[in-house]
Length: 105
Image (cartoon, rainbow, N blue to C red; front, side, top):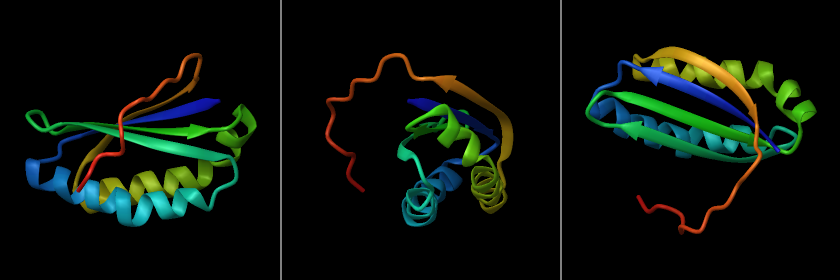
C-alpha cells in the first residue's frame, strides 16, 4: 500500500469545520471513484489551522495514476477553505493498524 500526505496551512477553526464537511461530502465520494483508492485519514490542529490529509492507495502504480485527480481535489479543497497547500509527499505504507471506530459527526 502507498500513501499521499498533503499538508494544508492557514485555515481557521471555522474553516476546519468546513473542511471536514467538504472531505465527507465531496472529496471521499470523488476519491472512491478512482481505481486503487483504499481510504483517507484527515488530521487537524485547530490551534494552528494546520491539517494533514493522508490518502491510501493499493499500489504505487495506483498512487501515480491518481495524481491528476488528486491534484484537482486538493487544489479545490484548498481554494474552498482559503488554505495553502504547504506540501505533498508520497510514502510506502510499511505498517498499518487501526482499531478505532469511525468518528461521528
